[in-house]
Structure formats: C-alpha cells, structure tokens
Amino acid sequence: MEGKEEPLCLKVVVVSDRVAEGSLTDVSGELAVKALSGKGVCVSGKVVARNSYRELMKVLRSSRERVLLFLGGTGPSPRDITVDVVENVAWRCLPGFGELYRYMSYQRIGINAILTRTTLCILHDGKVAVVLPGSPDAVALGVELLSQVINHLVEEVDRFEAPHGDLPEGR
Image 1 (cartoon, rainbow, N blue to C red):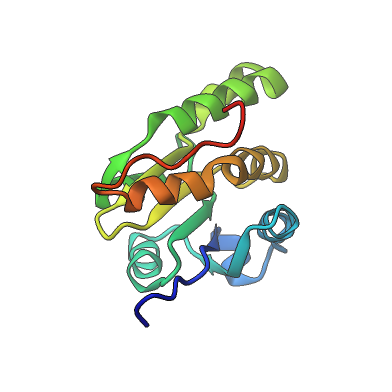
Image 2: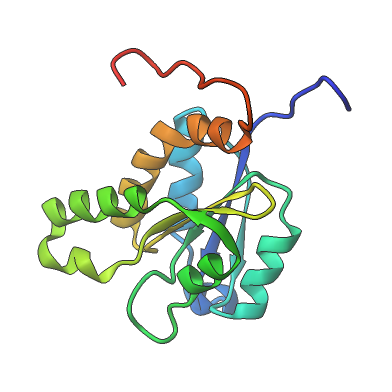
C-alpha cells in the first residue's frame, strides 16, 4: 500500500548441516532472536539452512525481509560457503563491519579472530545480508554491533537523492 511504511524486520538464518538434520540443537539462532528482540529490532523469524549453495540462494531469493542475518559459514573451511554465496550476489559489501567485528573479537579471543570472514553486504535488490560466525559468543558480539547501525544502514541503502538523515547525538 502506498504511503504506509512496513516496519524494518530481520530474518535469522542458521547455517548448519547438523542443526538442519536434527543432530544438534540450535543455540545461536535462539540467542540472536532473543538479543535482537530485546534491543527493539523486529525479528520476523528464524530458519535453518544447510551449508549448500542451493539452500542459501533459496533463502536469499525467497525472503521478504530487508535484513538477513546468517549465522555460520564464515571460516576458512571448504564447507564454510555462506560468505562466498552472499558476496556472489552482492552489489556492495561494507568492509568496516567485518573489520570492527574482527578487531573487537581479537580483544576477546586473540589471534583466532583473523579466521573469520564476517561480512555485511548490500544485495542488488536492496536487501542487507550480514554473515556472522555461528558460535554463541560470536553471535552476541555481532548482534551488539548490528543493532547499533541497522536502522541507519537501511535508511542509507534506500536514499538515492534525499539528504542524509540526522545521526543520533554524538555519532
């Protein structure tokens, strides 16, 4: 409907073969939903996808949400393909998100922080895709960062000719 804006909602996508087959209980996805909801972010739901190009593309193409938060698939293993799939369909990636994430992660876990390819990308259709590692601690850090920037990010993605919106005081 014209003139009526829909609320900005996010979908959590847990990328795990073991969770998909039922041999592992999802902890990180539930943590993300609870943490984001607690910060006032609309979460429309959570889905589970296997480490499969086909399944990840299906999620990217069929989701109506403006923001997709993928949990898992950021490491150096050949099975970790989430970042590759997202970047393959991205229009533009914002390296600062992953850089800040790795910096903050380094302060917590040390040198192993360099093993993540955490990323935030804008897709050709205007959706935003964020890919975080799947561990609960990694998800908690990523959600903390994402919740601080998501509304302004989507506003900027939608802005073609209008002036910049005002940033919150002190930012």
